[in-house]
Length: 135
Image (cartoon, rainbow, N blue to C red; front, side):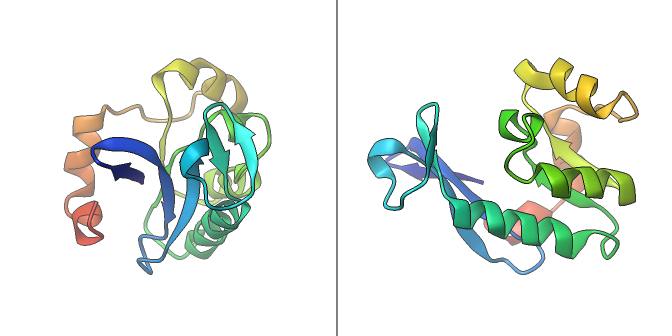
């Protein structure tokens, strides 16, 4: 989920929607108060990655659906939570957010067997799920 400082996006947090637990996932380099690897303008926090992995693992087979926001370039290269994403895709109903600019690579890697929905459709489908967690 995005993190803002004075209306400027400075990074993202990993949120386990089931438990409400959040961990720092990324920060713009000048706001990173942790050591991690730089990817573009951001620094990735390994503890945030691990938190996301655990959240996905916890949800596989135990929830009606899993929300993964997002499957990005890192996962397409086999990093981040790629392994857990692939397990989730094999096991159940997944709502995965992907960026418009990587959708072709996503479908090349994971196949075309997905229902595509727009942002407004997704908001309507999820109802108050995000609101409940202050998003």
